[in-house]
Image (cartoon, rainbow, N blue to C red):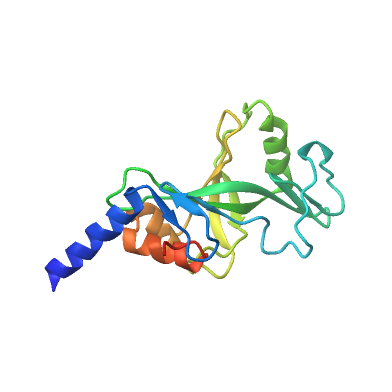
Length: 188
């Protein structure tokens, strides 16, 4: 039984590392590393139509590829939540959204174009998306800004939460294939 499991594990790793695969649902070729992203925070109640970052408004509602303001009271940024995949050299990234306090949102916006932040954090936030069956409720995260216009990284505060454990210990290649299937991008 154990040898069969090992064979499956190598097969899943090989399947991901082998290069391109044709997606079973969107009929597009994908390759490893292949990250997944959500277009808006779960709380965004409107159709996703991005405005230009330069048009950022702090009152009312605003959504761009990088910033979200809801009712002039809730501030969110697009980020990446990295997850290592056991047996693969490249890690997986969930492109998702995190809340920030108004103060930290302002710091992020101020340093966005240059990548220079007076305060490199980490800042406190809440994960604002449900990610592939890992979480259903908002989850406390550390938001780590990065230089050179790279999106901030998110680190789950609760290492015992399934998503925190995945970040800490990695996930199997089989689980990675399940995540792709959950999100509609599994190999045929």
